[in-house]
Amino acid sequence: MCPTAFDRGRNPPTPLRRFTLTGVIKVYAVALALGVALLIAVVIRTTLSDKALEGRARMALGALLGFGMGGMAAEYSPLDISWPVALAAAVVAAVASVAWVRFATRREG
Image 1 (cartoon, rainbow, N blue to C red):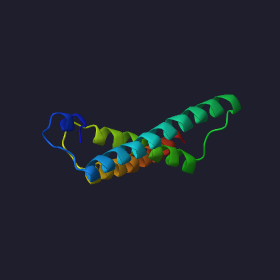
Image 2: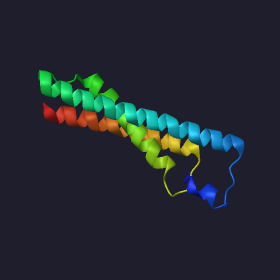
Image 3: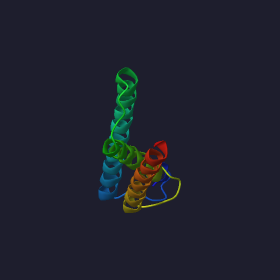
Image 4: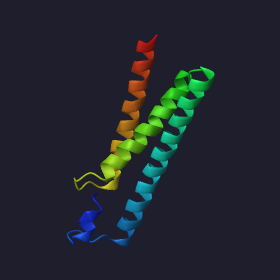
């Protein structure tokens, strides 16, 4: 749900909704920040040591980044969606990220 909808007075949040909304956004933000930090560390490690990540680590990193990006995008969407739908969108984004990593790894050879 767009946080500015509360400011306009259209949908006054209940205390539970306010807590749930901020709590879920924090989970997505932490997942996204952790994924970006790990991605930067992987790029630096690969550049310095010339060792690539194994397949499972690539998929885990892709899932973490996909979950964070999908969740943040769903929560800040202009559509008025509930947090369970945003969570489902984040899980779908994580699965899509893992599928993309597997596809890219197989094409790599």
